[in-house]
Length: 327
Image (tube, rainbow, N blue to C red; front, top):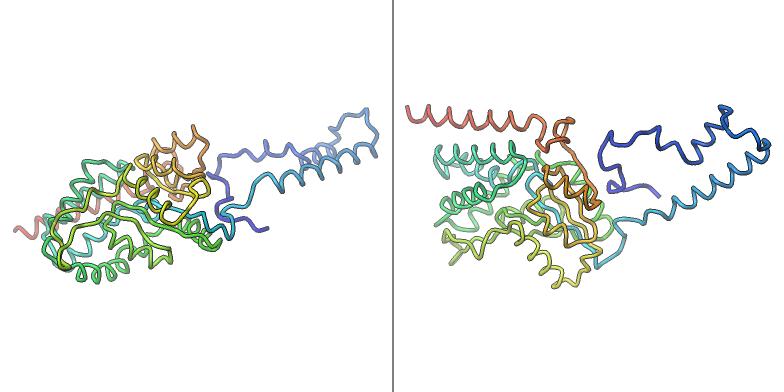
């Protein structure tokens, strides 16, 4: 049976190939080199080797059950969005698109750029900066029609988001879809934006932050609070109850320690491009780790390779553009 993307090694370079040559293949190598104990005859050694190789092969075929399980209608997968499915923050990319459409000022863009730079340099979500981003977004969309923002979101996805999807994470989601399972985005991003991304990726749907609207117009307030941290876990649990899912058979994927509550709900938690805290937690609890960022530095400290420099450059460009605009 062909292996799925979920069955690949957790991190490249973490397994010593020589140490793995201790099974039947390794014993065959030692026999060829004349390192087998001399007290046994050659026919006996070959018989022992054949028997052990057969037993080892049989054991390997049943050691790892198929995952995701094909046709399991009570299983589903839940994916965080920012830095798990997509490089960077969806809200920032959406803000860039709105700025291009003269939706807000250069000052607002500079603030968005700084928030994105912090997010990528730190390699982790910060509640205070997320609150700032949320308040900025709410003040910008207040008084605008929901349908207007959704239409713009479709265009902005093509312009700024489609090229920033992690192909490795996309393959994981596809493996669940191919197995007949439902796949949901779970994100603090606006539910309208999250729904567009989920649909474009062929996923089942999205759980996201809900902004209040009246008569199809945004009021500038939220319904409840941002879907962040423990709120994500509550949303996943509520959805599982509605759809009669067995969370022990479900999988969840995230880059952030803030999502440990969601990851802890399911039977198959995965740390994707993890920050340092989540990486340590994953190792302690035996969770699988996938890192699709380039460069060993990114793997060690949880910062996307070249992302920090790129984010700072982006913030600098935004600041310079603002200064030119003021002159």
